[in-house]
Structures are given as C-alpha cells and as structure tokens.
Length: 518
Image (cartoon, rainbow, N blue to C red):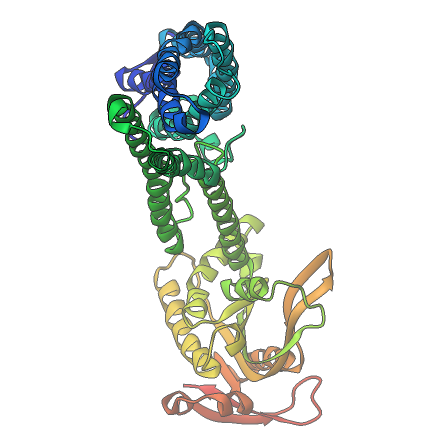
C-alpha cells in the first residue's frame, strides 16, 4: 500500500509530508494558466511571420503587428490568475485542513479537470480577441484577416498542449487518490467527463509536429525572410519541442505504465489470484479497461465460489460440468459410470446410543475420513444419505479409468476406516459395506427450472444399491458385480476379487454374479 498518507489525531485528519507533496503537485497545473501569455505571444508571432507573404504584410506593418502580439495577451493574465486562484481554493483548504466535506468537491474537480481547462481556454480566446481588438489601431489592416487568425492558431496549439500537460500531472498523483477515495471505491469506474485518448494524441501530433512543418513549408514557399525573425521562430520551435516531450511523458504515465501494470495483474489472475484488482483513477480508456478487468475478476471469483460451494455439497466436477454446458438440461445425459454405495453396519444400534447432536458430529467425523479417497481418485460424492454415501466415477466427469478408480478408492477407504477406528474416539469400532456396479446411467437435473437437483438415476444406480445391501448377507465389506469387473482394466485389481455367488436382486428378473474383494 505504500507509505501512510494521513493519520488521525483527536478525530482530525493530519496529512503527512508525502500526502502534502502529492496534493501540491496539482498546483503545477495552475502554472499552465500563466503560460498563456508566453505561448500566445510566441505562436501569434510565428503565425504572422509565416503568413506575412500571403496576407500582404511586410515591413512596418508586420513589425507593428508583431509588437501587438507581444503585448495584447497581457490583458488576460489577471483573469487567468483569478481563475487559478478560485479553482484551486478547495485544494488549498484541504491542504491546510483535510476535512472530509472537501473530498467530494476535490474528486469532482479532478474527474472533470480536462473540460475545466478547456473551458478556461475557450474563454481566454475571447478575452484575447477582445484585448487584441482594443489595441488594434493600425490603419488599413483588417483585424479579422490578420490578428484573429493568429490568436485562433495560438489557441489550437495551446489546446493540443493542455490535455497532455494536465494528464502528465494527474497520472503522477496516485498517492493522493488513495486519500481522496475509499479502498473499495478505487476499484470501481470513475465518474466525470474525459476527452478520448485518440483526440488527445491527434491534437498533440497536429499541434507539435504537423502544424510547425506546414507553417515552415508555407513560409519558405512565400519567400518569407525567416532569418530576420530567427529569434521569434526559435522560441516557437522550442515550445513545440517542449510540448511534444510533455505529451510523450503523458503517454508513458497514462498509457504505457498502466498497461504494463495491467498485464502483470492479468498474469496473476490467470494463475488463480482473483484478488489482483487494479486501481481506477480516471474515466479515460485505460480507466474503463481497468474497471472492466476488475468486474471480470469479480465474475471469476464468484464462479470459483460457486465451484467450491458445489463441491461442498456435490463435487467440483459436477460444478465444472454445469458451468461448461452453460445451460440446464432437464432431460439429462446418458453416461458410462461406475457407481459405489457405502453404508455403515449396525448404524441403528449406534444411533440409539447417541444424542442427535453427537450423532451428527460422529457422522461428520466419519465422513471426513472415508470421502477424501473418492475425491483423490477423481470420483464424486453424489449424495449423503444418513450414514451412507453414493459415489460416481465417470469419464464424463473427469475419471477416465472409472472402474479401476473405484477399486483403488475402495482399498483407500478400507485404510481410512482402519485409521478412524485406531484413534479410539468412540467406544465402538465402525464397519461398512461397499457395493460396486458399472453401466450406463442418466446424469442430469431433476426438478423444475426454479428448483433443481443434479443427480444420477437408472438401473445401474439401483443395482449398486442392492449389491451394497448384500454385504450384510455375505458378511464382507466390498462386493462388486461381473459388469463392474468387466470394466476394470488393471489386471491386479481384477485379481483382488473372487467369485461369491449368483444371486437374485430385488427388482431384477435374472440373477447377478457377485464377487468379493480380498
């Protein structure tokens, strides 16, 4: 965050030295108002000299107009001084006493500063015209054909310089912006009007590069004796160079530097850092891009939250599948899967010995041991059903060798249950039964568009549930069907199973071959 810009003393905000320097930088913009006299004098002379051959000005008449160009603009200086004093009055007050009530006024002025200075200069154009007109008494010379075009030319050049000069100052008061805006406000779009960057750049190039060459070309073509007025021309060219340098500085601080920072933030965001927001200071194109980037991060953060929330109740794979599809399919999709049902043995006897609160705590503790192997083997926990769980392993949900993953998961769940019992947290050991079956089932959203549940249904699910029930009858913990073993790829996994029996299952007309895991 950098150095602290202010601190509280007896409920009063006190600015430190760094904050004061940041605030005082804005006074540099006020100096721009006082450049009017020098700029207008130099550029008006440059214009008059260049077009002297085209307007018929020469000799004494040209000397008279050049002399008037050197003094007529002075009449607008008092106005500029008053305008600067009034406009910066709130900044001076805030520097002496950083009252909260002044913040909004300062923010509004900064947000609209470009148009404020454009307004000042448009008004100054009319003042220049007025004072030129008052001083214009050269016989036989038309004010509108000579002096007014010179003033207008000067105004256009100044306008091309004003905007980059203001921007180059504003882009370096970021510490002050931290004082004027709350932390969260800095990441939101700014208000206020701004001049598009294209027009700023175009005005700068035309004023500092195009116009000078055109003027010199026209002067040479009209055989104007430039050497005679080398001092005035050199002065104008010096201003052009200074303006161009200031414009380049503005481009660096206002475009290149923010884009470099934004590129770094985007790199962090691509690596999963959704807190890599960037501060928005102004309402220009860069500010809008930054605000859009921040909104994008909020969207990514919200989506990641949905992923994690789904994962708590269903699984991260289901969440990704739903987001990837981008729509809800009430009809469901047929997918090839292995289904596992796992249930605690003698749960009724266990539950009778515990209060409801203790029973929930026990189940949460138990599930914290036996569900991690499911996630580790890229399976999903579809449902918690009292003391039991239903798990699904499917290529559609990110588990390619789904049957092998279910076998490996069963082995890991055995080890997890041994560890759970070895801790002796409860005055009894827990045993479970696991039923495994593979086939095609329907995965989709069941319900209505206003209330849905993503679930798995079909004969494969029913058979897996019935097989899990047979673990009680055959007194073993893991039983699988022949269809499940046919889907197992790893030979060592198949060899862990031995034939148990051909038995009937509720709802099935034919017998099912069952195998127990050693």
